[in-house]
Length: 388
Image (cartoon, rainbow, N blue to C red; front, top):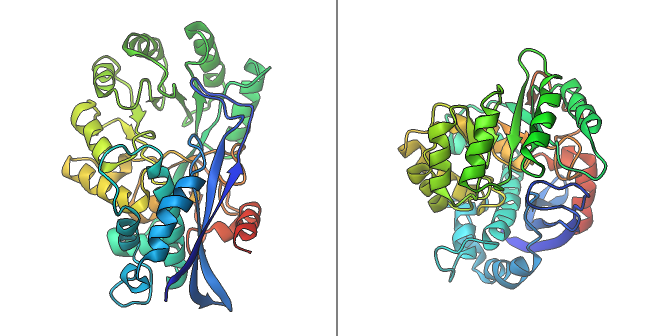
């Protein structure tokens, strides 16, 4: 067997929303298809992948560097020992040939997008859900398809006041989410506290609110917000400062006793390890949000999980950023703490297979081959156009 081609298309996910740092009016992503010569049900097996929101499409890097390396390699060198399936670790090493360490930047997104498509193809060739493949290869052998999810939203939007925020958050709670998240840092402290209080008044017992500053604050502002937020029973206070400012994170943790969350903008195992070494993160209460689609893919994420174990962290403290089905599969297969969800944003790339409902903050993943993209009709329609 062999990889026949790697296809990429840059797609818009534009929206008028903004967080404390960026707006999404010109945001794009890369949609990728890994085409194989394996035939299932009379059709070639094709794996699909895409990168998470918040970073742009990577078409040039994929077409100019990473696709050529894979297509020029000896096909047999990219297969497992039995020669009957792709070995994503070997393909990853091939893609990273002649790449210097460090400087992860945009290439981690390009590689992570292709990596997602590779794992989708691998599981489809085995005719299993990816979460089962992962549990058998790297977990305890038993996947748990029941996964915690929270609803991310609460963005700043032109003309959207407190009534609009209340309506949005109420809709998430009515759809079965027990944790909702909103943005802070894009308005004054007083305005943000009013927004927080408006949402807190909507919550029933067992429901919580998380807040996300998207790295906006310097140390003084991070602490000032932390002091104000200490008055509220929050699920977490997310990404207060620059993701690489480990001292800020550590000093914030010294004064903020609630749960902190960060990591979505760290794109390698080494950067994640520096956060654990120097960021003052507390494994009894804090959350790690590394997103495989932005950080060299599952091959690198497995290294990150191994590193976390060495430092005394449970995978259950990982709730990845991105709201995509790849992280849902990893959560179900490897025992992560859950996954982000965007109920109404960045469609059709976020969300769950059709018919999957949120119940008391959890979803049950269907036993679809691969990552399960084919179970989401609007998303699969986009994917089929790429590989048709």
